[in-house]
Length: 606
Image 1 (cartoon, rainbow, N blue to C red):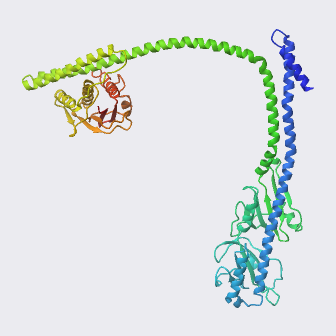
Image 2: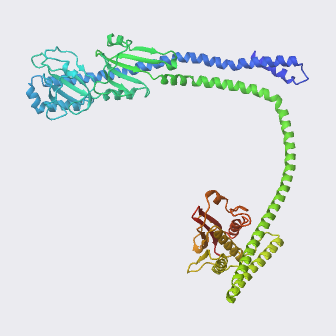
Image 3: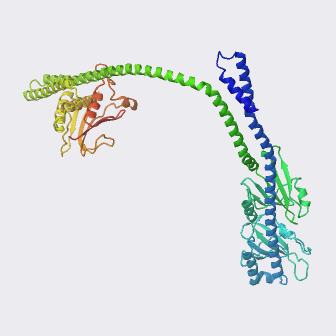
């Protein structure tokens, strides 16, 4: 029936294009489809809810069955342990039955027998006897009984006064041993001599609460399962997961729901106590009496474990329902997409063709504008570089002219200064020639520069600077005695960069100071682009104003300067860095406010 309905809807929808069927028919068909799709998606949910209700009760019953089996196993283990310890106590009592207390204290064979019992038992840690006055007459912890230890206040000693009739052994609360300080639970019985009447002495076996707690840990369903061994007066002998405290601190008030288990027969079934309403948050407690001992074994479940088991049982039904819903939803979506897929594909093709045509036009326009921007940027950089180079040359010529005015009466100095001016003029001619060569070059190749000795250039530049700086500033040149390697960069640009860095150093010391130019042969810088065997390191050092971190980060950018208007163009460091990069090296700046600046030029040897 459902298949016929779905087929009818599909056939009707195929003719439901706008203008083919009336709007009222299309509306009725859409309503029928929504109702049918809603029921098909609801059926897996209804089936999943039914499976959940059934699995809730099944999970609870399985969980209770597991708890009962665990409780029975633990009860058997506890009872077996206590019965074995009772047999050991009876054996020690029979060994000392015909002995007086003095012989018990001093006879080494009695001590050896007691220690042999400890060795034979897997749970007993100590054996001993207490005399009628409550003092220790035998203790396996020591070779001689400690005469000054009085145990008459202990419950396992006080439970058997003289004349006590024979009855079941007594289990004490956890306490610390007064002989060696270990936490122990004591199982004791009256010492009955040959006369057949208890004389007030006791035979005692000591064991750690961990004996039972290890058993609890081994069988616990989860770390949050609570297990407890408790006496009829509420004294807790062992507990998991939190160990019981020694010294009598482990004592609780027995809930009223537990008390019927104490009065039940030793073979009665465990008592189940449930609290809470929701199955996955329900607390289940199983209380079971340990044989004919007045002891209760209490097992409280971990609610999260019950919840996890229910989720595990519901995993497959949930996956099945989800798969069914996904399949139905996928089929429904496929039917809805089938009619519109072809139209969407055609619209996408048309849109893609239009977008491609538009992108082609925009790309052509952008490439044209990019070429124009690159051309403008290149012209700007060229003009800025030429202006800065000629500005440096003019400054050198002006400084030389000022020097000639001051030394007009000294022919030798005039000749030296004139020779320097000729060199500067030669650099201007060389610069002009380079610009003309650059303008004529169309293959993008730069002719290789001849090598030169940088030491001569540095001496000439230092001499010119020392003459032109005046009396308030001094120039100190430091060259290594072993000489400097030749350089393969442009000599005129090298001299211009050195003079420009020195002028910047002078301007950073308005009150005067010393400009230090230091050259040395150094290994390649750590991040150098090349790895030649020898590099030239040139430091231009001043002790002037220095720069803070923000200014240092911008130093070297074109047209950035801290000098007042008319004193600088902001192109000196930018041109120096550009020269270093073209030569295969780099320019580093280090500065501290108030301490000065160090400009380091790294150049590879030619």
